[in-house]
Length: 296
Image (cartoon, rainbow, N blue to C red):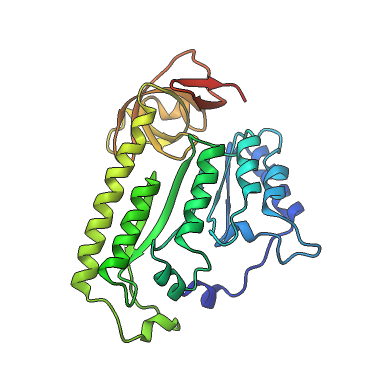
């Protein structure tokens, strides 16, 4: 990855500064905030004294008036069960985790210098789904890393079959200046990379559509963001898991509002719904064979 060489070493913003910015945004009328960091779970490790990301989430997630908070990007090396617990217990924290796995093969992960194994990744997913069964898990993956064999690529597909991600951002490896892998002699042919990218995208779309079936018939809390440019009579928002939701409505009336929407159609990467007038919007779903709204 070229990012460390272009951005330099990670630096954690002081907790008070993060909280003050969020309080200011809420005072301006913002309903949702996203905490952004390349390896956000390592926040606080460079502070003195050291602090944990889970404690930061509990602190800033409790800002009065904040409806939703998300965070990206988590790294399997630093992902802690305490972060999962915080998401489960702080009402404003959205039940979604973006955790790139990049490859499902330990040899490739070692060559990438990722600092985790496929088994460790599966353990993290198990921990999330045990604590938060309805949470969305999304990821990034790379195909065609130098030296990747067909068997190693199949290990990536198997990890995907085991996890069944809500969404995966995929890319074919491309050399980057000042990275060791760029000058390795075992570069994968472009035609092979293109075919592997097609296969991984096909499987990712299959799993995404499968995962979205659970929303059908449910009333989802949707934070409206903007007008649907393709269908101006519709607005677009997101549910707590971050999935785009489209439904008919007036953007001037609904922008920035939390709206209860009954889902009537599931697509691979979006949902379509109908406004559920007078229904409760808030809380989380508990899956005990039926979709039950539990007030936060």
